[in-house]
Amino acid sequence: MEQIKSYRSSQFKKSFEKLPLSVQEQAKKAYALWSDNPFHNSLEFKVINKKLDVYSARISLNWRVLGLF
Image 1 (cartoon, rainbow, N blue to C red):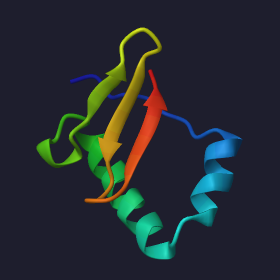
Image 2 (cartoon, rainbow, N blue to C red; image 1 turned 120 degrees about the vertical axis):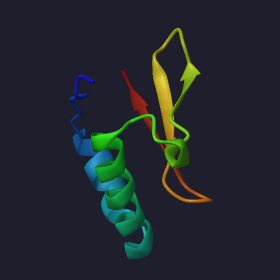
Image 3 (cartoon, rainbow, N blue to C red; image 1 turned 90 degrees about the vertical axis):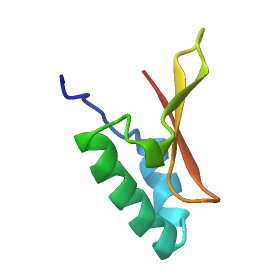
């Protein structure tokens, strides 16, 4: 499987730093898992808007991350 390349925008970095530390840690673990296997079942990686190429992945029960393809 080809590895997906990603980057974080400056706005994402600013928003990430405002999250509670526990959520930041969960997000880092989810990103590591996503980097290894974007389609791992626990991430629930899915398209939110096909036209705009917006995707979502689960960070925890109450948190998700959105991204653009």
